[in-house]
Length: 248
Ligand code: NAD
Image 1 (cartoon, rainbow, N blue to C red):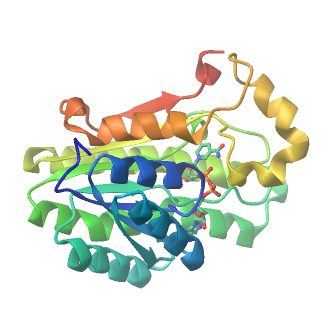
Image 2: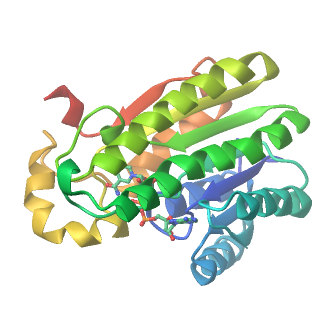
């Protein structure tokens, strides 16, 4: 264990996919990891596996669409491990697929609540504790759809673009106080999030010049770099890990 020893990290959406891989790597690198997810049993299983593997981890149930739930989860992280230094605001949903002129109003609100408001609520409650702990780093999980449109995903694309703006603003606000805030923009990644899109799989692969989907490991690699002191002058920016998608 190296790199993150003595640091407490909160990862939302850590019961599955990208968040799970980020949590695993943070624990392996010595961080105390709070595995936060609204899938409570999933979070407990992940925390138990990380502890079994020799790491320090605890599970907390959080619904990122509920600011009070987020506040409680952040406070429990601080109480469990003392302080908060690192946060990965990663919980997200794919949402319904329909063109903008037909998009369900409730479907829109659910995606915005989770993928945008959830990131704001997380930052809102994490930042005071990160400051109180002497500074740290945050990664917000955006998407390639934080810069591209995608037919059938108006809410998802709007939320992921907005996360980039929120990231830049928080970075500017807190840079002088020793907090870095960056966004990661993955291309399509082979996780349970894509389960509803199996019929689209060949099309999704064709969007990536590398001819395949990405892996959660490849996204976690960039995320851990951005959280680390090796990225000490990287702040307020949006970093793609997309197999060439945006270059087409
Ligand atoms: P995933 O479905 O494997 O994991 C998402 C996790 O978030 C799940 O464990 C789920 O329970 C949790 N979650 C969902 N809503 C929540 C809520 N309201 N409160 C707390 N937890 C909640 O998905 P993933 O692919 O690992 O996605 C992680 C992040 O990466 C998301 O923000 C997603 O938009 C983003 N992303 C994914 C892809 C992709 O292709 N998979 C591409 C770009 C960006």
